[in-house]
Image: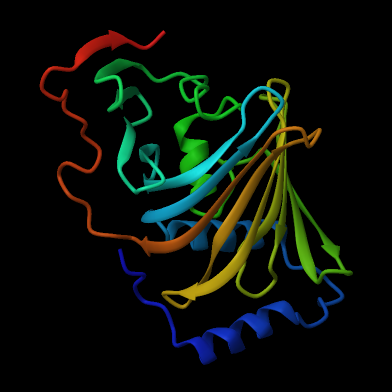
Length: 258
């Protein structure tokens, strides 16, 4: 897989430096709603990706690292192929956010069931909906329309900080936003059932927008960390009819997902 639409290295380096040396923030912040609109507009520009990723998971009960082929498409379509050290697929997972299908090549076992927040617990120590995983892989946070939004400056870093409150759900999201490109560098998601932090790095210009090729999701206590780095990446790819379909292989035994 070859990365597409990347600018030549000297120009990419120049733009990255320009991004790293941000000018001072204006004395008066813009309206919070306008900054949030710009963030959402940028998010909508990236509807999906295909990539080869280095994935590492570290937690008290589960730790691993390896290469995976990842397909992610909004709102909650996800395909994961876990690779052996030789590059052979060992595990296939496909979900549309409603149903999940899993095939273990080593065991020749096929699993099928309804997608729940814990359906990825065999791989991810944090219970996430597939929409949250897709948003994370596309460099954003899980924010629908909030009841309240406010803005404040982070003058030391030259960033706008948006705070989104969802009063009926008891959820608060905080976003650290670049003032020119409106990409998210960090995010905190706080809710009763699960709170976590997001961070994005290794920004490179793709389709005239900065996109992170490195990302991390961490629990608030820092004991659980999930990191993803894309050495190869294609954004807004052409999708094939079979990209999010996983037929039962010949001879495989079919089991319900617990």
